[in-house]
Amino acid sequence: MPERPVVLVSRHWRDRFAELSFVSRAIAGAASRRGAVAVLVPGPGGAREPDGAFDLEGAGDPDGFVWPAHLPSDSVVVVDDLTPEVRTGLAAAGVESGFRLSPRAGADVDWPRIGLVEGDGDVWPGGPFVTVDPGALAHRHHGFGFTGYVLVLSGRRHQHADPPAAVAWLTSAFHDCDIVVVEDAVASAWKGRSLRGTTPVDTRMDLWRLVAHAGVCVDLAPGALVARECVEALRLGTPIVVPAASPVASSLARACGGGTFSDTWGLIEATDKLQGEAAEASARAKEYADATYGDPEAFVAGVRGLLALPPDIPSRDPGPTRSIH
Image (cartoon, rainbow, N blue to C red; front, side, top):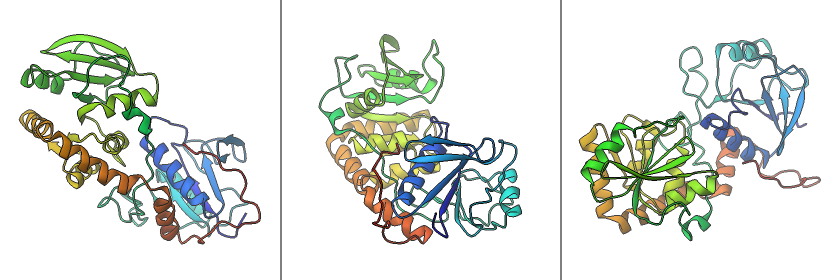
């Protein structure tokens, strides 16, 4: 272990549905390209479990935090969620400064927050590498025989008999347009306010195919840290429409000519505009997203500079290369 390893304190590492998990793994993966990384998670002190490229180490239960004795207190520390309990445990170990990922405010405001979208956070290492499979562009989702629909990501975790209110308005405004809603791993096709059919969304590839063959992607509940599904849509050449009240997603939309809305009429206007300039909007979306979120080496370099890491991994024993996603 180097004298100053990167220590990632993650309370959300195991929560695969949380953007904090995705962002934590992205930071840890980039940092591991330039040195040793220790990942501390809730669990019995000293307990270890393998997780892909990393061995997770227990550092106390969720209501407490204990700094492992073998880690130097001058380590480079990144915390995904700087709760009062974590802050107290770090201070007890002599760790007084570091970086945070969550927007939690209060006593922790002196820890700079790493933003993953330009203009968000106190520091920005560049956009994280957001993976998509270009093969999704070659074949549409097998459940539907049409393309060019308006895709709506509802953000709702459970199936509902009725679509979100925004979808009802879209089907009314665009009576002849197919509206596909994804929620709780099911895609539902609506047209003229009538349900036309459903199909499961079993894998990420299923979602990417639905996104890739949409004319517009409306994300009603984008993630607060990087709006991952929005970035995936952009990388697949599908322009986005997002709530103006979401700072991260609206920043993405502004950067690539997407749309934002504050009310129903704004949603309809933004969707109609992007449908009317489909080719140009698709090209802008893909160009921006590939340049900002499609270069893993640029993100590694950005994290290295931010955390003041050495330029290269020691060559004596690089070990096997494994995916962290």
